[in-house]
Image (cartoon, rainbow, N blue to C red; front, top):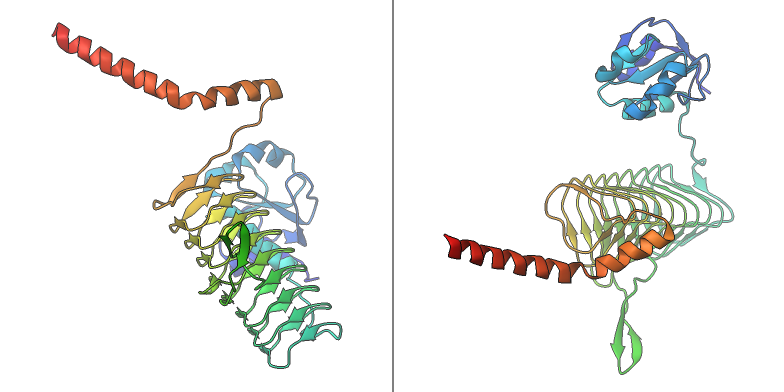
Length: 328
């Protein structure tokens, strides 16, 4: 583990402004609630301000709007959360598998592996696969033939890249399989969590842009395109041929229906179902709040009559306008 750094040394490496003693020694990061001496914590959400006053941390990272909330030594940063992430990297460098192919992995003879690639035990790398330099595939990753993965990718255990997309056509009550002849193309600096499925395209390739970050148990359907630096939390499902822009964030459990387009800089809240294209940046939410079961049943029953109620309101408005015009 790296040695301790003073608060001033941290700021000199990462930027930010020090308030208080720059010589305080920091050995590790911690949470506001759990940190102790020698640790640095952060405040990014105002609702945790009570924990700031009680923290045992030696120093904190916070924004300029919160600078006066504490007298502890502190670093003032424009984005405290991102700054804290970089501080954590200083004390906890990412440790990947050692480069090379594990003896228990299977790699096709014509697969092309860049310098420094690490292939874990139980991985299966198909024919014609290309994997860029310094990428790390943890044990049990499967990459089907013809897929391409960029440089510095991190792919966690159980993920399958390039399995057939769900392409079937109904014919006389029977399903006919549509051959999935596309591939999967993954950009540089992509991280894919455990047990994800990135399906190959039916005709064109499925694509993940540079810097995409996927949490665990995510499904990306065939022919989807995910723009650079978009992030998705766990259990997101993206149906086939959806187009998602750059710098989007998709909350846990969200569903994106197929053949839709989502523009750049869109935030989708957890458990939201996107059933139409989004062409304007912003935050979109479609959650139905939990309630007591009986109240939920009553409210749901009322929602079923919402269209009829809207029609009645419009009819009443028309009558009022007619009567008002007659009195004029």
